[in-house]
Image (cartoon, rainbow, N blue to C red; front, side, top):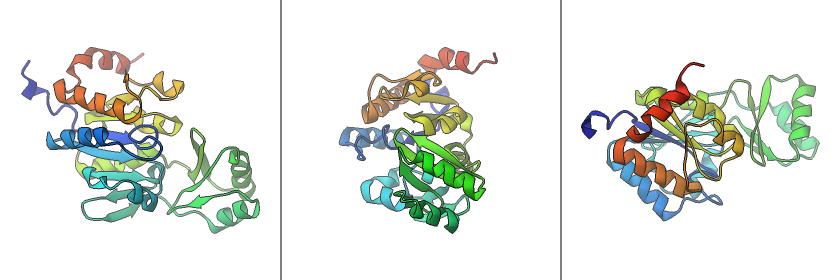
Length: 242
């Protein structure tokens, strides 16, 4: 089979940030070079993160490598080429923000997301219940995120791919934690880095040997080599009806 006939089977690589691309909040130089190589070969990158956008922009100077950024765990879509952002869900109710502060929960409030960390998840659950809100709580290891019901990384990625004119089947997703399940399940090929949680490793199509950015660079190398053609049978088997 000619490589040219399969090179665009996967057109987009959708990456989680913390624990996947980044280690201790930052992306190392070898990983950046791998992202640049993938982009130079005609594929596009989408970042899918629980981070608030303003915070992300201060720690990721290479953000323009990405065609789209899905921030706040699916609540906000950012276009790095123009600097435009689009809110994909309602903002947090003031009564929720105030109630959590009254209960001395340390929170960060984004355009839609309300974030804290364990062990404050119990208080967040109780507060949402007490206020009768249709909100849900999503975990990212020790991070705790409250969002409107139905908002997650998959809903945000769906919007990003629609803008790019790409289908989920043409997308490879890579992640490491609980909040990545939704968008990984959406993608035509799902991948976990070596440091991923066991629950993530059990559900993905492929597992990388490298951790964090090294695992993403390993995935990119394989994508550029044969567009994951070497794993076609394995991926097809994982997606076959039970």
